[in-house]
Length: 430
Image (tube, rainbow, N blue to C red):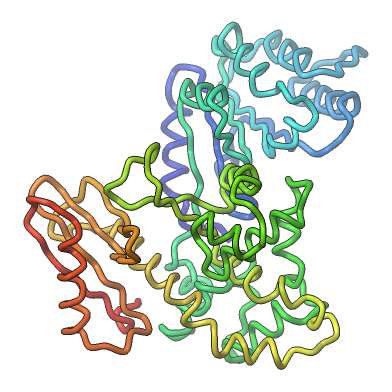
């Protein structure tokens, strides 16, 4: 089942139709759907697909060479055991029909050859850019190193693949209720493979029990399996993710929760950012390079749920002692995870149709907070107006009192722009 990637497909297609050769990068965290997108795009096109797996260099490049010889119909007894030789081989081919070459799971190639990105970039600049090809490099790691970023910037396009939006849930599970859509979104996320296992004959909690909490279920170890593929010191990374899932978003809070120093955690946090597992957010009016109010959030709702409720309870769940965990989820889930999921849902809704909700297209949209624990869920503005949004999933106060509080908090943002206020309530979900 393939859904909701029309924009990315159109970008790839438009690039392919250009008369030039182009190198593109496709980035997305594990399980976000990069390979599904690639397979859909490659259908009915002249293409060669290379999946990078962890293997010693000699075997990997020998196998890649054999694969390429088969594709280009070349017979040779020569053995190639390095990346430079592979690129030379491609450059020596007479490519008449435009050809797509995909290098998927590129992060594994970097494990085999740490200089792979620079070798390919250099070869592209000197020779391969003159070939009749579209080179797509797909990776689950978006490096923050300046030398890597410069290479990305020189490419024809960089596609950052995000999670599918919430509407996919209704397409996969059409009979689910509005409230359960938000519960599913906050736990299963929008991965189609996870959603297909949801049984509408059972209530939400029973689905969670059968798919997440049973030690023999396929999602029981899925969170750890996703994270540990590209990490070594997994116990620290997993602990950081657990801390964030529990509501610790500032680096100082994460460090205090784990009993570690903030400086010790810096490299772990950055690695998780590079893997697109967590994202750093700053207040909408701050400079990304200077802000001291950065907060970290788990990108995928499935991972957030898993590290919040499965990871810390693995021992008792392996003993099939499910009742304490289920009871805790019943009491804790809505206020801890669903509230944030609803805020993300509203953000997506507004971002997709800003004119509908704001009456204008904002220059910028995001969240705002200060060092006095004052927060505004969503803020957007253009050159004339600024709009403040409050998202109400669980809040027990009235719309009127929420409106008054929102107006009061908005006074902390000094602006000459005309102010507007929007309240989103729980029953708005579609």
